[in-house]
Image (cartoon, rainbow, N blue to C red; front, side, top):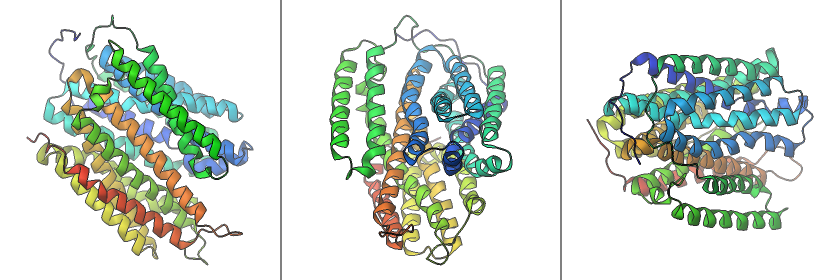
Length: 465
């Protein structure tokens, strides 16, 4: 039952800026492990399997927390849930910064994973306190800053860890998260609850959704080793199907479901989820393959770049990713979501195909990665904006959460696929993959991305102003 709401309090640029600052800080904190994983493995004496676990545990937690945070934000108010969620994230960052060993660091990463839920909560606040047209631009700005923060964390984590220590690479963005949360708490007014607080939490649905997402991430993590563990992977697939079936059955019978399956049946929702997944698979393959190609020894066919050089080469992509969000928000407002998504798909497919054909010069990879980052930002932001504005305000959090969870899954699938291609393309006794493995990866990503145009054509044009 929807609560009676007072007219919303309009906010200015300072409050939206506070949300953007929080997006930058959380994006940076989310991304510090990936570029420094070899360093962490050395310092904490981790095995490759333990390193793989550390690299995905934040994604698993984020996939679990995001739809829950979105639903609770819809029900109890975005600001109320956001501040509490950021307290958990800040505690996780501090635990990671002080961690003396792997188990404590894993605990910190589990707590940090709650940060992924901050985006749908920010979108709830934006829709509650801004008019429709301005909210589209603001959603784009916040989304773009989160992506930009992630790239900034990727670029800075290595130098901070090597110049100061691994502890500071967690501590600095955590301090930024605490400061940004304080700004949001002071500048952003409370939004009224969208649903009656007498409705209970759908614990059975939450448990089954958690089991589904955890099992899915485990399947993705083990998929590259299917040859050595076929029975385990097969058993996990069976468990995954059982979880999905049980979750759908329970949610259909629940009076107040955590995620209403009927929402997934809406064209605006499933189209956004499908497109986001496919686009993020293509993006993630490039995110994985391009740095690997930079690092291939120069006596082979690569450039022999170190961590600092790779970060420098990826900087234009970071800038493009941070600009893509606001550009996409304005594009959706003026042209509609279908036009923006279609343009992004064409740019990404062309860039991936070009990289397959031309990757012999550093500038080839720099320009290609920049275009891919721009296209990904355009598409995903347009999908989130379209989804957020196609549902009732009371469903903003859960609807955008579904798209963001799909984004996480798409990135996981793309990274695993890229890794599997390079592993399969590495000759016996060599540490350097064959060049053809990179070509296959770029061609595959480009073809899959291009096919998504078929889905993009079914999108509604979206509201224009």
